[in-house]
Image (tube, rainbow, N blue to C red; front, side):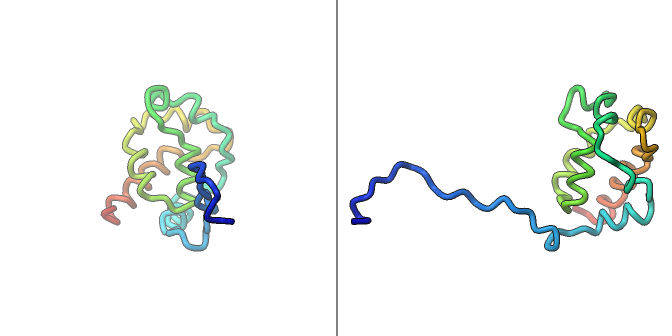
Length: 115
């Protein structure tokens, strides 16, 4: 009976569950040590709303923060190069996160780890 079933072109999707225990969180722990204000980020989007680079690219600080927590260093390395380090994000942050310091520390970490 199963051999007579038609193939409709559908398949089972791969699982999209993120196993945080398996991710490389070295960058996250490094940032927590050298720039403790990073833990204050509430991903409100104020930084993204004022970002000059974000208006013309896919740079979103809160996505970078989420990727750091997930351990996605390849995505971060690609996105972080778009930052112009203008500091507008730091001026509007309601939690006073040192966003420029965070970006610079991420760049430093990624250069030292030779991604």
